[in-house]
Length: 140
Length: 259
Image 1 (cartoon, helix red, strand yellow):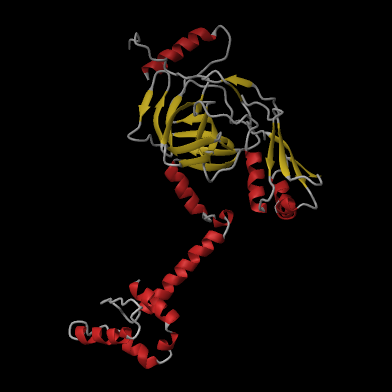
Image 2: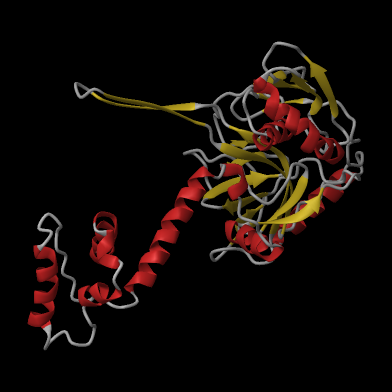
């Protein structure tokens, strides 16, 4: 029984009691990426080069992503990512090379919008036991 | 090495020594007359160096004629190392061929099938079957619809389908298959959900009363996989019909238990 692609994500209670988003399922989590730069400042040199060299290819590779360029004069450049769970991630890219900016943009695209906290478990499951949880009073 | 240092200092401090080829010949020790000509050979350079006592004398018995070529190649290697330091990290990536990628991925324990198709048959409802799967050096007991955080898997993008080959154990409600060490013809299907960085861990080092304190931040690169399917074991059939299925269910359970 497959679920449709555009179904809203549902909350699942994991083993540790945390709610984790049953996200993706084929759905990209990054909705919008705002590329903010300044046309005068020297810290925006890298991002201006990125916009000429890597950004068109990045846009083509991710047609589902809405990429917007924004001019902010007199301020340092940054990348803002908006996720489906209404989270925002801001990365300051001042004085960075275009390749590094491309790496950061790719990282934003690859991530879910969840808060960056230390992992509690590396295995998140809803059904921890198949054959029955072992107890001392179990008899075979 | 000693010979190289010797030659360099000589060329820097006493360039006029090397202008005459005859003087050079007198300095180099012929290679094949080591035993006999040891004493006369040593006297020649000492006479030369007597004029410049401030220069150190390095004697090397194994000085060959082709040592100059080796010295040049060593110098070139050092220059290449300096250039590598200047080159930024992002352009030092190794380009993998398709075969190398598959071989490395296979070694870690997974295989990339391809991007997720838009049919979305992949996300099935929960089945009471589990498998113990190994990725790299970590082992996980997985079931359908679980998610797993592993080290960053290099050769797959987000929304890719993977097949995990290294299955060590398969189990269902009434059957267990144990591998030696892996179960052949067993496969666990997974989908890459995200490639992300873990939270920052600060590595703080201190030695007390020694004026030594270091702080280093580290973020581990992780991949989140969603397990979709386990193959290689008989799954119990779940019949979703109404009441008349009750005797049918009991019959199926009996059959499964006996199998």
